[in-house]
Amino acid sequence: MTATSDPIVRTEHLGRVVKDKVLVEDATFEVHTGEVLAIVGPSGSGKSSLLRLLNRLDEPTSGTVYIEGIDYRQIQPRELRRKLGMVTQRPYLFPRTVEENLQFGPMQRGETLSHESVEQLLARVGLKAYASRNVANLSGGEAQRVSVARTLANSPLVLLLDEPTSALDEASKLEVESSIQNVVHDQGLTCILVTHDTAQAARLAKRALVMESGRIVRSGSISEVLHA
Amino acid sequence: MLKFFTSNQLYLGLAQALIAASSAMLVVLLARKRGIHLERETFIAMVRGLVQIVAVGSILLLLLRGPRWTSGFLLTAMIVAAGATSAGRAKGVPGAFRVSAWSIAFGAGSVIALMTWFGVIDTAITSLVPVGSMLIANAMNTNSLALNRLRADVLAHVGEIETALALGAEAKNSVSPYVQASFEASLIPAIDSIRSLGIVWIPGLMAGMLLSGARPVYAAIYQFVVLAMIFAASGLTSLVSTLLIRDRIFTPAQQLSLQPGR
Image (cartoon, rainbow over all chains, first blue to last red):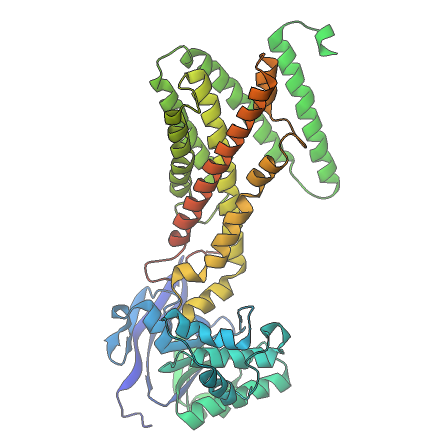
């Protein structure tokens, strides 16, 4: 997809200040359909805070976000969060089976996710035949892939990934990254990836923003941004 | 032994209070040896409790001779004080005082009103105020336990709650396991009190009735009546307070406002 299409996500002077502490300041950027945007920067630079603002888990103190051209304050928070599905650093699976975890999101809207759909979603993240497993018996990498599948079960327009591999060992990290590659690249899902790992950003994204002290200090293609 | 030294009831009471408080402070000293520091909080609580109960006793002496409406005034004042005390156990929880006061007013107040109407509680101030205060005090304890537990559980499970929100769950559904757990935990003391009645303990009210010459069987039955009323008042209070707090820990945009360090 080209960057000339209408942006699916557009932020305008987005910011959040808590008790005089600036978490995010004047963040303005666009993400287009099918694009993978990486947000990179050191710890405490405001990357995760920015992602939380996109999902409206936190309220902006300035600016706003447009989803498909609509100010996101006009969208019901629950519907917004379904559209902008988020995968957190730790998977936080509910203490049930893998299948029940995947059914959680649709169930919130009164929908039932069929067993076939569960199997298809699990196949997309390389976890075929895991549906009946209890999440207590999963490795860190498997749990994070279930978390990705659980978010996909809501059919999001945009996938928000908040440091999805930072809590994993190297082998698990590659497994999860491969699942993300499959979901994002092969199926053209729009994605915003927060990572402090610039090599990972280069592997998964074509465009990047660099944040420092809550501000976007650089943006452009991966090669421009990371080699600047 | 104390009666050998004084026959004055006031001096006797103060000496008894001093000895009882010393035993409590001994426990505090033992806790200190294990690195648990309760000295300041316990000392202040005991001095405050003694001053308050003596002050209330003195005021009661005057009010018990007054018109019946004074019992309503006294019980309302107790509910407000109970709300303030309970709210202190839910630091950082938005509107904890208002929620506590309204919940105790609803829980204890409705049981007091209903039981007075049925004639289970006598309308005389000498009966209504002490029994009402027991219901309010127990409702306060239950409310404190519920709010304290809910606050701790929410703070310990921010990730799980926000994950549920991020998956499109309604705010109330995202915390429902913790609301339920806090409600159940808050009622454990009330349930255990009824369960162990007469076996583990003979409560003060029954002991008092026996000492004042009531028939033992009636004293026993009335003690059960009081504990059942306490359970009803406590349960209603906890139910209302956990539901009210559940709605207050989220913003209108369904964002969790109770967060560590905020």
